[in-house]
Image 1 (cartoon, rainbow, N blue to C red):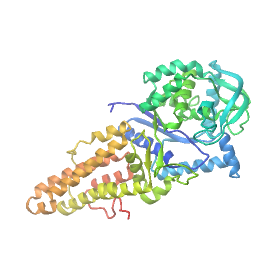
Image 2: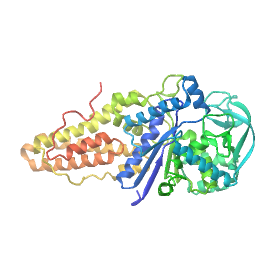
Image 3: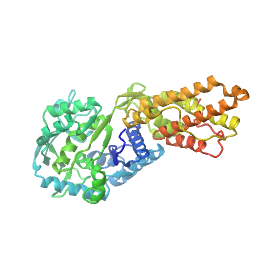
Image 4: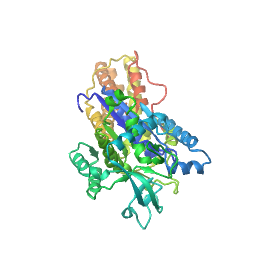
Length: 478
């Protein structure tokens, strides 16, 4: 890890509020929260942003279907996201909503600057529009005449729009991505983006004439800003672009945009090009995590296997859900999750693993040392854990941590302090001092992923006299 990094600005995508949050949204946001907590722990000036994307035709349609006006509808759904993040122990520094005045003001300044750049022009568009994506798509993107993701036939649209000269940025984007000046990870996503660029970039519409729920184009109020364009700008508006220049200069460029892989082209092609047009530095790094299947099946409302993370939190607790999602699937890859897998990891890794180790150590310290033990340096180096988390290899970091849990358990079983204390109390004291130090270090390293459990461990070990807690850290679930 770098010895010094003065600031760390990390973002999730802002989530589209046509429906409530699901486990995929939680996955990306938990990972971002872990990195934000780790960078704060390292002393970096950290800013963690998440929020909700609240404009567009799809929102307008969803609100109408629910019998509500758009603002009332987005207020309710956005609140569900905020509550879910609270339930999962996610602690952003800012939660932006695109219906907020600060965002609208910032977007208006951005659009005027974009027009002044000479990279915007008026014209007619005729082509295919996927309502599900809220995006124009090509004939070549279709499978059997329908959008492969939404299984719907795109609309044929002919309309007047304002366009952005994306084609002017083909070579500079390619060069920046190839040189990792815009670092795209995992490498498969970098290759995917470069392949798309090599096919040739076309100019894109930045406005729609018949969408009322959105932000008007400042110089043409009959046109509404295309939802993807103004939504992308949240990363700048949230840190004060055009309004609080001191804050903007402090945190921009973003150090890391985190997102699902389905939106990577928007973030690695359109977004940096728009920024370059207004002479702002692009984000430094974009990381795309994979998709979940549930018990082998793609997540789908039709199948009925959409997982509400709040349901899992209610049963297993936030720390267990955070641990499971980041331990089960290597970050950046696709993977399969299910409640059965969560329950299995909960009982084996948490209840019988870390929780049992905590109980054993505190019980022995109370019994054999009258709770009196000093905190010393851990005899086991756990820097690999934080290093792995820093590099978004959460699964490996947790694997290393749990190797230490198993090592400590093995040490206890081999030494048999319940017998040894009768003949060699000094050896038992030395053993327990080392075990307390290891447990304290484990809690420190795991705190970005499991903040509540880590705090309980550290609070217990930092008491004047250590006593075995009255309740298990992770009560076993039958």
